[in-house]
Image (cartoon, rainbow over all chains, first blue to last red; front, top):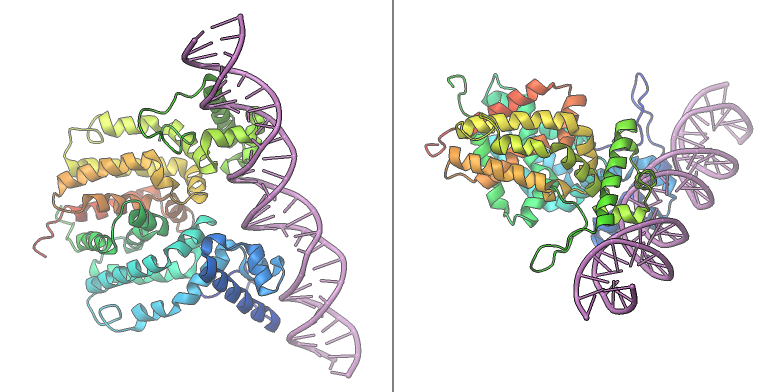
Length: 208
Length: 208
DNA sequence: GTTATAACCGGAGAAAGTTCCGCTTATTCG
DNA sequence: CGAATAAGCGGAACTTTCTCCGGTTATAAC
């Protein structure tokens, strides 16, 4: 995550040129305007035109800075959750390093459930206008790598890469919201269910 | 699945009034036109205007019949897969009744992977313009009920309802397509990974 | 066969996302 | 400081989805 839009085609070598000062300032203005609108009237009514107007820039600028609506929404999400990554990468056990892998997996998934609960509306909207955006976004990659590492420690020999995706999948914002709203499941029930799934990972399958 | 759009608000009691003959005919014409366009130029370029024109009706008619774009897409999907449901509900074992539950779960998930592979583009598009549509659609409900029943047989005492969602989640079209395209995973790898996850379900967790 | 009515029809137009392009400005290099 | 240039800017215009409503037609009751 962190940097959105802006550079879609990278130069063959070397880092992308730094953002010009005025551009960086516009990025900030846009992000703040978007945040203000979301706080005031919800994500549903966040139109690109309005963001541009509120930020005092043209629509074109919003698009140049963030690529598309999904990009803007993910930037908004990232902006709020950078510290979450800190917690599980370098924080205290059982979330951070120090605890045994399976314990960390559980703690991580639990924390992710809470995060999803808090941001579900924003996440659903973001997923909506760009189906791959969730996976292309850096945040997902970080979660995936983290989980895959832990899984391969807990159960060497399995396809940790795939299982990480599979464990993250039930936390897709649209399913999560459907379970919460339409199915009437509460957060604890979801956590318990996922714990059950994780427990299965700890099994020795070779004998089967 | 089966019936899309048309009746969003049901009468309190009794079945909805039958579709008028001309309306039913338009439904057919629209579905055929849409199918033709998809076959010719892909789902990406399926615009409601064009469907209407090709079917020889007004746009309003398309919307009255199918509710929205997602509704039309799901109708298209259902139209092609009604027999899939037959297979696992009443077909031969191990997919159909007769085999032991865990065996049937595996067979079902495997078959679903193949179905997702075949329809992924259509499914991704449908999920895109209406985040809950996948779950609201009758097909998902059928899968969910089927799986939940099998899970509660295989492992009484667990939250089969939740686990069914969790097992279906990695088959979300957008994740699936991302794994196939961006991650370069092949279908067998996905099946194997899911089998691994299912195996975990067979564990006795009470001792843990 | 006539009439009442509920369903249906078409297409104009509103709303929102995205693209395009001529003009402006920050930055760099001599 | 004074070009040269690459980056950035704004907003009009285009696209596509979806809504609305005045007029039409199928269906059923008499």
